[in-house]
Length: 88
Image 1: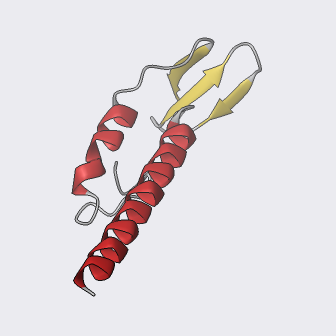
Image 2: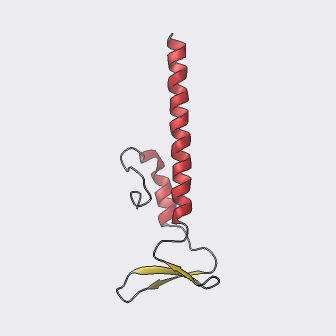
Image 3: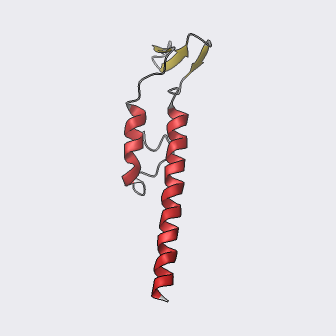
């Protein structure tokens, strides 16, 4: 599921909690889970009449992962720059 969200399982081991949150996330209000004729899960929102094969919160978790990953990379760059400055 982590890969489905765009994560690199090896490189993002410390961020796998986000995938765990996503896979266990409850459906938002108004959404229900169903099976299509082939047995595939899909989700339906009774308030908007929208249906989707992707969990309604997946994009939010994808976005959160990208934000956390970007922040982590920025922090690592700053730490490396500080190391270089201190070593000079």
